[in-house]
Amino acid sequence: MSSLAVAGYEMRRLLRDRALLGLLVLLGALASYAAWNGRAWVDQRMAAIGLLAAEEHQMLARARSFVGTAPSVLPRVQPVLPPRPMAAVSVGQADAYPFTADVVALGDATTLFKRVWADIGSPTARAAGPFDLAFVIVFLLPPVVLATSYDLWSRERERGIDAMVLSQPVALGRLLAVKALTRGMIVLLPATTIVLAAAAWAGARAPLGLACLALIVLSYGAFWLAVSVLIGLRARRSTEAAIAAGAIWLLLVVMAPSLTLAGIDLLAPAPSDLRFSTEIKARLTTLAERQRLHRAAHPTPVRSPAPTLPDQLRDSYADLLATDRALAPLLAEHRRAQDAHRQVMDRARLLLPSVAAQDALDRLAGADADHALAFQDQVTVFWQQRRRLHQAYLDRDAPQTLAEYDTLPRFAFHDPPGPLRRGLLADLAALCGAIGLLLVAAWAMRGQSTTP
Image (cartoon, rainbow, N blue to C red):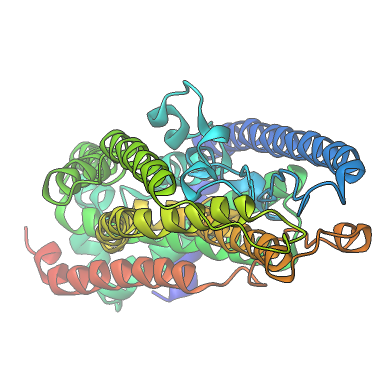
């Protein structure tokens, strides 16, 4: 019995099953709805960015009339994080982080993202995200793969023809490999095509991004195909195989991520934002009172001749810098605690294939935490640059000119080119590693399937 004969038989048997067509049609309908949701989310985000840009343009135009009357005119700006070309694929954690900032040059670092994030939305709902293509891939693709491949070997056992099949000149390992690859080709190739078509219709048309999306879908589907092989080697009846497939899907996709997250929150909890906010407010109040008393006890001497820019402005700026220095240890400690919690979660994701696939899709779409934090870091650098401009005007003792105002730096988010980044490659490597472990386990168990 040749491999081509086995593949041809499996192909004919699977194509005669009308359930396959029904599953693919259902997957296509759900993928279309998910793509519509993703496209609507991107359109909504772009509309919000357009409104912010128009508001900032009007503010710049109004503030121009005040140039020369103050040491510096640095109007409030709102940098934005634009969606990536593949943003419609996954909303991910994009709603759990601010996509804009409130940059006031003479404000403090704690207010950069505070005002734009003062909403009453549920953080759990924001983190879960809408029904997008990533949900279809991570949650709904595995049942399609399992439904068409769970009975790789159990059907032959039920019919009592397993011994007759193995009496042919074909090894069990090669037989199951050919059967699994044939079913995977019939199921995964159309499913991948459906996902790519839905993503392209939603606006995610970057060629490299689509190629990376196809790689993620095929890798994740191959993992569940390997699960089917393992089930086929253990289950002796199709009913047992179906129950085992459903239980494994429930465990790996639904329960394990939730239990892992709960365990991480217990062992390495994230720092309390409420406590941090309370400490910041208390520290700011103490610093303001201390600075007021210091200025009252040690007034700045009056210079003669008087400078062009009053020394009171320099005193105020010095107080701002002193406040920044006093808050820096508290901010750094909070950031270290957040990074430690996030690092544990990043390591844990590599142990769960479903989480690794979700993270890969998030990174492809730019909806991951690292992308949002990179935006926050760049906004902080931009805020510091604008503050240094104010200091430069004070140091030279001359107010800002119209030419300097018209050439004020603008914020532009710098995103590394290309979809294949280190985190995404790590997710793909984790999926490949999980597939390899399952295949090794299947190879070790192949002898058990030949015994009654």
